[in-house]
Image (cartoon, rainbow, N blue to C red; front, side, top):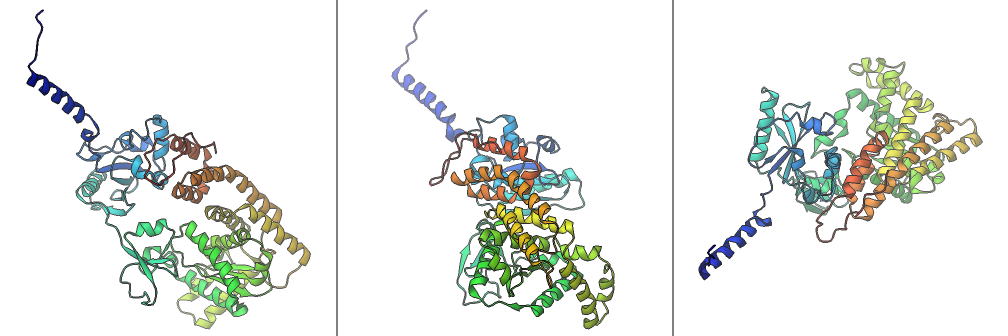
Length: 492
């Protein structure tokens, strides 16, 4: 066979061809990141591969709806298909990770729930901005979803909502709000999402969807106003700055850590030697000076305030009214009775409630809420059991108490302490997981998991699968961030 010799210029061309081929197959020629990824969730905002099967969409440029293509192959190359599914099972949890921009290939996600035909939530993975998209209501489910996806693809993504932060109250407002005092120093943030990530609270005037009063009917609002008046008429409000600061700081931390939609609760100290605490719908939350003297740590105070916050958040006063002998009577006279007559009727119900306390199931529910709220805020929930034991001992020493008594009107101490300790024991593995995440610099995800403690108690195995997969990720970190665990986190 005759040998083939190439001229020098031909060799040069071949080399250039091979180099260009290698260059074209390298990172710069890799498929451009898609614009939009779509996940179909169930009514509880949870996701499974089976749920995604209900999303039948044609291929479109810039769109990814195959769930395995949503995740970056480099970051997830060590993960099995099952582990990838664990990561996506609760999208809000994964979006709380500081690595969300590294984990997802698209720049934006569109979350569609299976029970909502015409609306979807669009999330910008770069800045966290969110936007509700609404399709026409008179179209079918398939057409509505196609419309939502087209809107997301054609749009520029969620527009950031600029806000200004009152540096004194730590409340954020819309720029130019007329109710902002010109004397207050404010700082600007480019997006409301950034304020929420800092744990700042929204102004209920600028953002009325966060106003708890919207969720109340007229009867509950009137009961709350009258109950607050009764308490502040019977007790003198303390002016002690140290007591007020102590209660305010713990209350603010509870609200910020638990991401209350409306953090406008007032915390009031009553100048009384009684050992007591009260709450009314939407607040205020009251605690007496006498009870403060018996509480030795911020953890104990946090448990008491969280207990009362749960009463308020769960509408226990209104629900107690619905169960009571007064049900229907107060509401029937609300529209036409004189203020004094309505006040007498409502006052009888409220006096009965304050003297006898809430029902056993409401008190136990408030105790569970206290454990979850204090855990979310990073307080030691186990100290609530100590607080209950302490107040139980005082109750036995004092015997019959003259007047309303926080601890004498609640269910048996043994059952309450047992419930708290059982919850704390079950939460201990999650506490270890959270601390491991915090140590590796992923505080945002750790905070989210703290707030989801009730979901963990209901299904610890589901969270175990997520954390095992998350610990196996290979992430390219931004400068200044800590490395994730090189091995899976310990089992919960």
